[in-house]
Image (cartoon, rainbow, N blue to C red; front, side, top):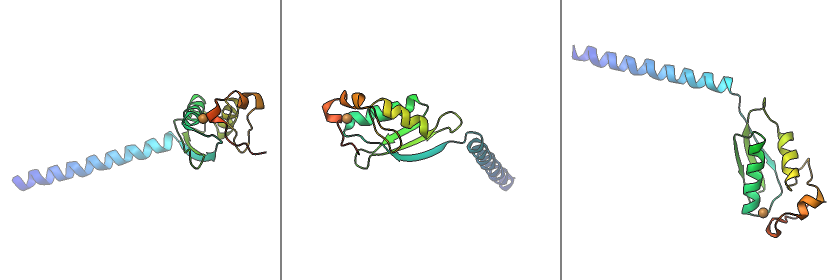
Amino acid sequence: MKTFKIFLAALFAVVLSATTSAQTNGQTKTTSVKTETFKVWGACGMCKTRIENAVKTEGATTADWDLKTKMLTVTFNPKKTSIDAFGKKLASVGHDTEKYKAPDDVYAKLPGCCHYERSK
Ligand SMILES: [Cu+2]
């Protein structure tokens, strides 16, 4: 009887773990979240906050900008937003990307510490 109980418990555990993994598979299929990394010019911690907030208002789920490498890693739902939308938004708040350049007057209004070296 005791062995039978252990057998049942083991069987239950196997079924349970199989169900959980099936659920996670289903989730990754339905919410197709994309991760991309691209370069955003900036200079300091204030830039980091500004850059990350800018892409989040454009629909990024997560955003992490590296001050040393100037690389921004974003996760987002491609059905809701795009790298293009992020680039435009970043330029509008003063940060150059490979594709979109910030207007000179917006760049000029950034705090002194944020005046990164611009590519010509
Ligand atoms: Cu800054």
